[in-house]
Length: 300
Image (tube, rainbow, N blue to C red; front, side, top):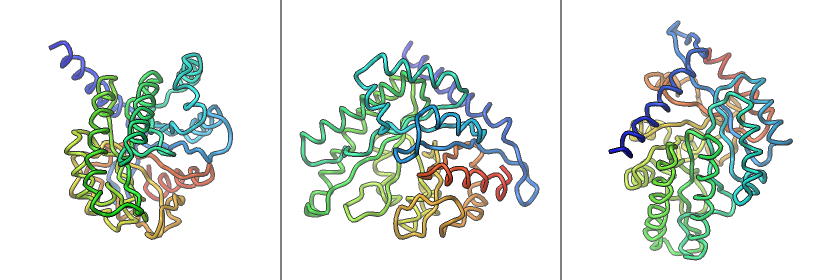
């Protein structure tokens, strides 16, 4: 009973924090209808500067959410160094962002059919989840993994089962640590992607029993943005925003590719005020340009 009360309190706190963060982000749509969005930006390993530089940049942009990437060397070095974790936590606590953390994705594959690599990947992501909780993260994001195109297609089922088994463990650990756990949909690639299409992604989410970080740019590479919103609406807890021309995962600034974001948000307006919107471009210039787009074109 105590466990369930604790989990209910954590869920209520997460919802309350999300709702409160909307209060200072009110605007008007093109039709004069009041809307609000929880706007954020995401870290990436190619961004120049230190973690402190990223925090200062985000503060100047006046965003509410900062999604941190566990692939950042600072975070990798904190997995087994408590003093480094405390140093990062103190730095994060000096700002007032809502923090999300993205699990490592470089050199990690939860779906690997190589059992040694699969175990190492799961251990790495669990380490990242533990660190994320210690840093005060509210939400934890992970990719599901892929099967190399060098393997025969008949192994897709095995890879999918491997991913589900790993993700269940990570989801439970994240929930026990007080975080919302989400799987992120993947982009179209040469490998066998296990969460690139709406039906695949729903299979993972339902079997794992978790939420979804819906990446609009990734969905566009599969030409399935609308299908994702219709099929997976109730699972979406976080949204990644970036642009592309539909052929590859470019992470362009919003408005510089082929995605009609005005049309997307017109369709999404029934629920967009309840979802954190995290811009995921791979340069400071792209992040600022995208934030400006959101505020100018969508009146956020």
